[in-house]
Length: 133
Image (cartoon, rainbow, N blue to C red; front, side, top):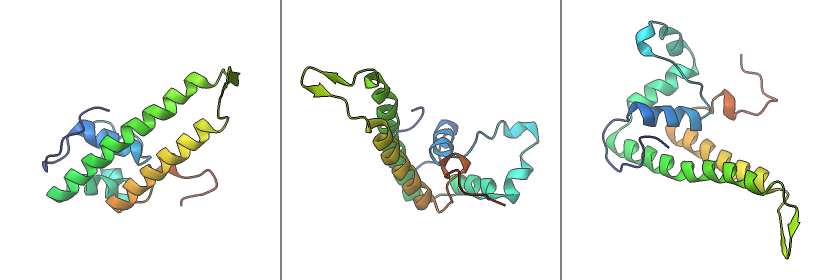
């Protein structure tokens, strides 16, 4: 995870905002310098960006705690793939639900982060059965 882990109450770095967007299920926004940024402020994406830029000092610190906690959970999902090729070895037997269990735990904490920030989960975090109009 880039740029996070600081317990300071200073505004978020661009790297931290990128990680927060990703963890909350929002897409990359590109360069603000491109001039194509006004569309974000008419949708939930804009509300999310406003939140990231206007947290209180204690909220910045808490957002960083979420970043520190979510990174190992994400890494654990990726690491679980190392055991997918082994169903049983000696007395050890792979949990066939490990990846799904880890993804559920990771997504639970991602949704808690969205709740803390007061935003709805982004498109990547929503289930496929919902249609947003």
